[in-house]
Length: 480
Image (tube, rainbow, N blue to C red; front, top):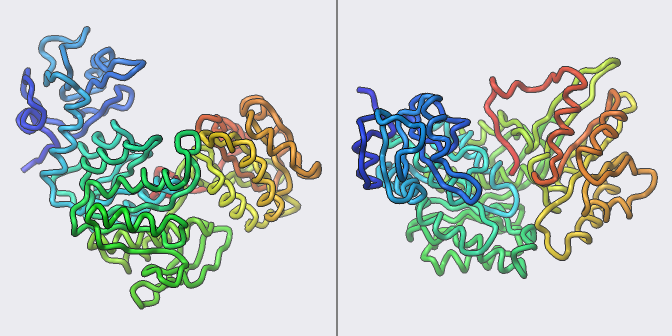
């Protein structure tokens, strides 16, 4: 018997309202540009758009029905519709109903750095152990979380959802919606300085993830992080007593014992509840080794099998904008592009430099860093940009290119021998980067999404024919 994600009856029971026509849907969408045949389109109203204006486009793309507050213009009377008072609340209701109807073990992931990659890695390894629902990309806010939940099939064995925030009070309602059996906090760092007065305030905001949990839930926490004890206390106050610590600390249950990193990944030795595990990680960098311990801890906390999950980690590759590596063929040889263009913070910047420093360029090639602004750092933004120079020098980066207002602080303190070029924007920096790259170079491009360094990646790839992993024919994972 064919099973549908949503039907007129199940969606009506979840949201209330008035049904116009009968329909069955295989998916849920809030964006007409990505709506697929068989999707239920929810016409969300935002501050600068109204989904009702795009409902006709969604039907043209094959939507099975629309959830709307009125019959949208240009949508015929025959088109199936679920009329509700508030489409945002209806989306939340669909997500909550999907959560109630499943027996899946649900994992929620948050953190200052690495949450998207950790979420993707958990999904990656659990898919081999049972049907797994997961939020796509970084769908981690007040729309993305209920949307992701609404897409979870009733027969899912596992659910993996990312929860993000910019301000305090944002994670708690999302956690109550997700109701996680396992909550992962990758780390707490000062990357939200524009919205918080102290790192302790950031920790308290991240700890809101415990508010949707029951007493038998599991908290997975970074034992090496300075906020560990504060987070343990917050978990206890929320009634969550089962804490799994990961890290290099001697008290960590999932403890890093040894790491051997090469340009393709890392060989890891860990002690897990007194047993030694050795596994290969398919992406390089110590930060990814630490994230992998969180992944295995989450799998164990959710009742999955740790050994097979560790074996699967060898197959990880980087997501676009979050560590994907490309080998570009040009006249005279090849050069490597590492795409870190989606996000940036002082912690993730330094981690990227450490990875770059461990790569050995071939044939006289150079280590090149192309950097855009790190945003939302608050009053310490300039000093935190300037402080990057220490790691750049320590990791023997040959050339540094900078774009943006805040990166000017780094440019001012760079040794002259390391200066590539600077520009007020990434688009103006672009031709200066493409004009200097040569065979043998290894180039990392990193910046906050708002700094718009992605087009530099595209321009470098356009110089030749990438010879890297085909993302359409390989499972994908990595940074966030």
